[in-house]
Amino acid sequence: LPTTLTEMGAGMQVTLPFFGVDKTYLRLGARPSFFGEDWEANSSNFSIPATALIIYQPNEKLILLAGVLVTPSSEKKFTGIGGLIYNPTDKLSFNLVPPRPTISYQVCKVISLFLEGNVFNNEYKVSKDGFKGKSLAYNEWDIGGGINFTVNKNIDVSFSAGNMFNRYLKYSDSLGKVDIKNGPYMACRVEITF
Image (tube, rainbow, N blue to C red; front, side, top):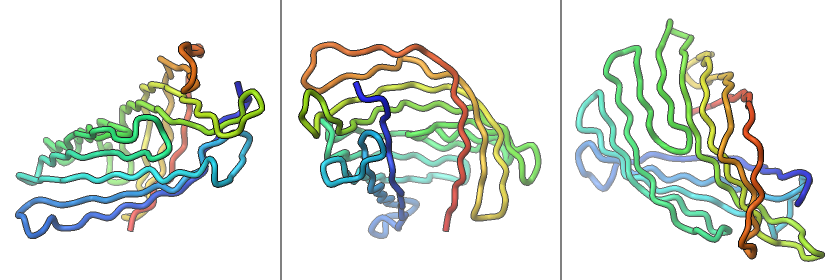
């Protein structure tokens, strides 16, 4: 097994009206990335995961989403996506949309507390037995919580911590998998929107 798995990339998405259908939108996203080992960035570990979502907003408090995640370099190329965003009050929000569903409570104008979950499943192109480009899947589930600071209308900074479980590594050409111990995680995220 490789000692280090690395992912380097950047993503963007755009939301547009869905062909004139009332309260319905189309969101397209792409995240060009390198999925490899030891910080290698080359054509063999480059992929562009993409999403296409139909968004329907029946009222001010509820948004429904359905679509597909396309991962061209993995064995499972198409994955269905579904979820909802529900805001029962101005302070409480349920954002139950992959890849990182959250439930958040706004303490004041700039601070929110949240619970989060994540199902992480990526394939990396690594060297094995002298061959480059072997697919190694890494799976992990996360549950945790944290705090979010709204710097301004375009920038959010969050800090979270929790536990990782159901972790394993598996080569695509192997019948077995390597289980990894459960453990804690900490994360810092900066989100910039335009």
